Image (cartoon, protein in one colour):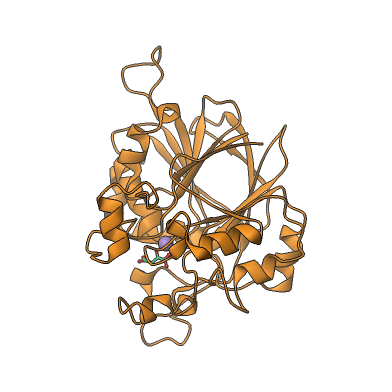
Amino acid sequence: MKILVLGAAAGGGFPQWNSNDSTARRARDGDPFVRQQTQSSIAASADGKRWVLFNASPDLRQQINQTPDLHPAADAPLRSSPIAAVVLTNADVDHVAGLLNLRESQPLALYAHQRVQDVLARNSVFNVLNPEFVARRSLELEVPSALRDRAGAPLGIGVRAFAVPGKVALWLEKADAADLGTREGDTIGLEIWADDAPSIFYIPGCAAMPPELAHRLRGAALVLFDGTLWRDDEMIRAGVGVKTGRRMGHMSCAGPDGAMQAFDGLGVQRKIFIHLNNTNPLLISGSPERHEAGCAGWEVAGDGMEIVL
Ligand code: MLT
Ligand code: MN
């Protein structure tokens, strides 16, 4: 199985359009230590020919253009794509807006939990995915599914969705509800496997590490995990926001309730932070935080990263 990181950054990307701090400026200036990153998505393939997108980022058109594996093959029909299916982990803008790029009557299978499928069904703009060509399929929690293309041909990749602590998408929050209207299935993690490869885990949004999640991840070959914020209050400290990571449904990388602490002792063979917010110092190569994460056995995803299992 081959995995490509299409977009390593969280919502807004890096640099975000209105960021005017020194890190954003360095990224815009082409500083090699502060590389620009597009918004949150990975792709996986079992055969190197047919690909599954995991989340559809607003930057998907750019991601396809800069990824030869996702270009139509030279001997393919005049309208074709190696992208056969899309799997969504939630309804966040950074994970669903890219679906609008997949217009134009191209056969596709779209997998998501029914909560997310209902959100898409209520928003008629997503009808640009021509229902005659796009099969929308519901992912049930804890049920292994062999992913199939629109016509039903297996893609050689299996997934199992599981609920993780999180919240409903920001644009769907109910201000008058203590839980913001969050229900099971609004945010899922995914176990992903191919016949000839061990399972990996893709969890770009996760608010906490309950014991059952730690148990599930124990000894895994690879986990791509929520790296939104380094510190829970970093947006407040930087003076660019009022929310903590916890309020946004993301556990921080560092700190006593952070991911590095939570993964300590789980024996995960390869740990990679992904979905990095523009305030996260992990985006800066050579930063002390990057060094600290590296010492704890963590890598940091970047656009174009390839992983073969
Ligand atoms: C998130 O990951 O928390 C969301 O993408 C936030 C947002 O939509 O801005
Ligand atoms: Mn996000």
